[in-house]
Length: 336
Image (cartoon, rainbow, N blue to C red; front, side, top):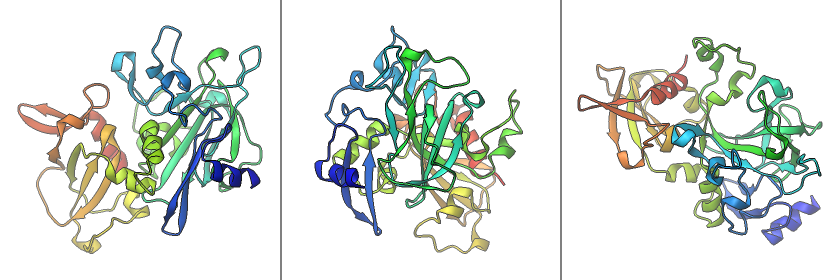
């Protein structure tokens, strides 16, 4: 507790970057960098905190977005390297909770996932509910259990190189994500696919979490340009709006009722879904309108769409359609 008070006063400390913003809906929103590295807080570049995927790769390969395989593969978070290691190269950095939250999921078996040992924290004080994910851990704090409250900047584990595949010891890092969960029935979707392995992580499989760019999120936080993650998400550009012919409310809205809607459940015939960059659902609003298609594209701003690995809209014979990726997101969002 004493450390947190000091951090709140200093803003930047050696261990954790922290800065406070005004209270929002009775909740003080504070954000911590998830590793001890102060380089981002000091305004240094990618080389000072991102773990690149190999010695001949650019540091941007550890960033968020279409940064892998010459832009053809998406990376959902950041890879952050350690500032303290043993002589053998084993990372010794502690990992910290980015925000106040609750432990939603713990994966203790490294072989069960490409994430290795990982933690998912739920931040249900925000609309929509935000999740942070911390992966490739060497160790998870033994005091953590599902449902336990965690404070911002609290140590939750130790950086490592665990995964279902081999990560060299000298490339130990934290894989860190901030995102939104799409469905509460993910198993149902997963079991329809032709995956060779079973889903061992229920609703906290990475396929069910859609991320935002942590670098942009933290940068805007430093500028005090938003007062909660909700404000930040609402500020993102809308790549496309699609209307889905569906009466039942999706999981995201069952948990986070849409603002400003006066429609009764019986009068809802469709949902207008606004998606930000890379498919983040920014807004889901009910509508009374009906139409023949199952899904129709209402609007599209091509300049914000990805040209590479996660395009949301495609053109076929001059007409706009949801991409395969967006169809998957819609299937998960409206899963019964």
